[in-house]
Image (cartoon, rainbow, N blue to C red; front, side, top):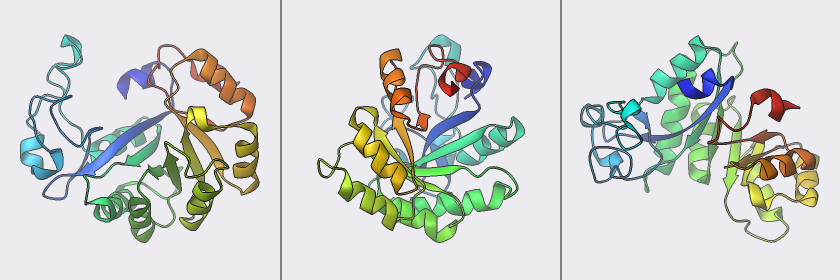
Length: 226
């Protein structure tokens, strides 16, 4: 998050899940072994144990000792530095509704309504329902990795049923017809994970509204806005 801000980005995306004692923390995987100094299902541990782990040493010496962040701490850092935030609700299997509710409660409590609200996204419809229950004013986006049908109609129907403001698709799924259909329904079109210049240019040419990238060193925010 700090590195992205140093490159000029004004919005960050993160993955949120629940600890065994109900703390919302950030981790991509359900298990710990790939990116921390421990192993097993992350959601099975209390926050007191998760907070002790090294979540940076796997990447490089420069990040060794970096702890797992809580969503609360990241949100406060984003507010202090005037960054917008996209929270992907990525629950431990079986905790879909509970995790969505907890994310909504947390953001209701700490994110001022006078600020541009965060965006909740999830592949799990139950998580989006949970967030809608506890924070109906915070916009939501449906994540889609594979279309339920070739036309995209089923996924768009689900997004509308969940009162979503956006659809966030695997970038390869967008076509001119689907962009027009989603825009025509009043939703924004966003994409993940776009790490190649040709893919980014294709999405810009299609008229999509947002790009999620890991390559903060490759794309400049000014370039993608143009």
